[in-house]
Length: 306
Image 1 (tube, one colour):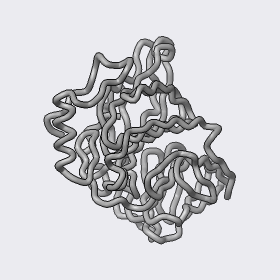
Image 2 (cartoon, one colour):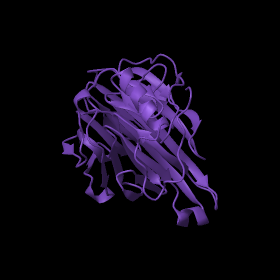
Image 3 (cartoon, one colour):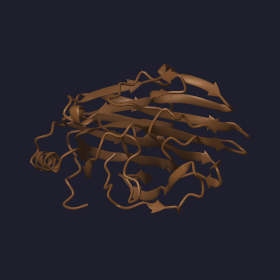
Image 4 (tube, helix red, strand yellow):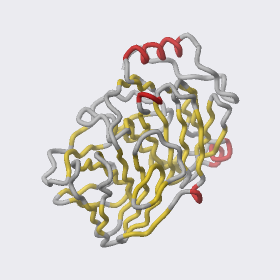
């Protein structure tokens, strides 16, 4: 997605439980014809492990004749991770990739030294109208991998490991957790999982990583004395045992990992140095990034300020 990600998030108040450090609320933002809920980065929490950006797209109904149109835009220093619950997005990038993203699939695009991509509703769904509900996250790359060659990897739903545990169905989307490892190529220790909690479930949050969070997609959960419904992210205290409980069932994602250090973020650029950000701004302004084959006619201009 193409964000303006510097606006502050709303802090939902100081948690009243030892398991939590922060509670974040999604805030509305428009990204090419679709309103998303943006959680990271926020004024009170910039990152969770290496995850530096978190958008919830929808749930939304796209009327016939309209659709998502995120025009070509650049990235550096990060990997984008796109995962859908409903709908379809056509991904194109400057490597020549053209890939429909469907529910349950993981789209992992490593920007590294620089890539350009677009995300649009395909012609068939645009004609008849469709629903869209999904997540896009950004993973900041470790310093030694910030300038890695750009790559694109698509992982179909059936290739991702699943398990059932403690009244939950878990699909591991990236990294390692709960004794499973996803096939997605990663650059630092992290985990990202889609979790469906059955009614009356109590599910333990993995304690393998320094930083961990849970984002509620549907239903509601409690952790200690805190309750969270859709659009809320619970950030867990380092080293503290934590469990999520639900009465009527819920769907959420768990994410986290080891910190990669401080990062600067401007528009779609993430880097460990301000000089690298300035170079990327010049390169985009002056047309030095590559084009997206099949989507060369449009682009998103560099914002003058954010």
